[in-house]
Amino acid sequence: MEFKIVAVGKIRKKFFQQGIQDYVQRLRPYCHVEIVAVKDEKAPETLSNAQKEKVKQIEGQRILQKIQTDEYVFTLEILGKEYSSEEFAAQLADLLTYGHSKITFVIGGSLGLSSQVLQRSNQSISFGRLTMPHQLMRLVLTEQIYRAFMINAGNPYHK
Image (cartoon, rainbow, N blue to C red):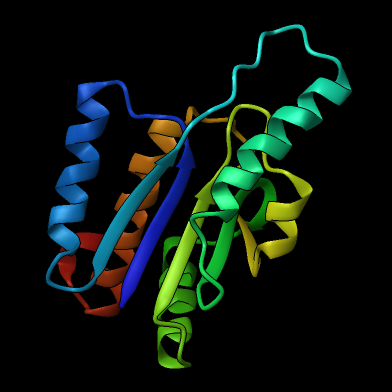
């Protein structure tokens, strides 16, 4: 089984890189995890709505180039469906049981995701209504994927 995280922007802080790598390493016995960073588009603070849409379109094209047709795609969105850790674990187990061996998570840039990426999504999920930096969101996501595997294996890590 394969998990991919496609995210806009690079991880610049070493402590985020170390945390993400720790969870990717922990996941190795259970699955393959690939993290793909796509270039973020320059977006000054004062952009018109049309300019914001243009930035999202460019980033969206970069994201879509990294997604294959046979991947089940989760987009991370503030207004997506919220799961408990146990519900998230059950959702992943169901997907893997019913033939979805390639699961991709998409984390957008500071302006969000383009309509094309949202249309490609199989499901939108939310980790709450708080806005998080993309670097932190990658760390939280990798930890939650690991937690899901521990829950499904009956491992005490989750407690």
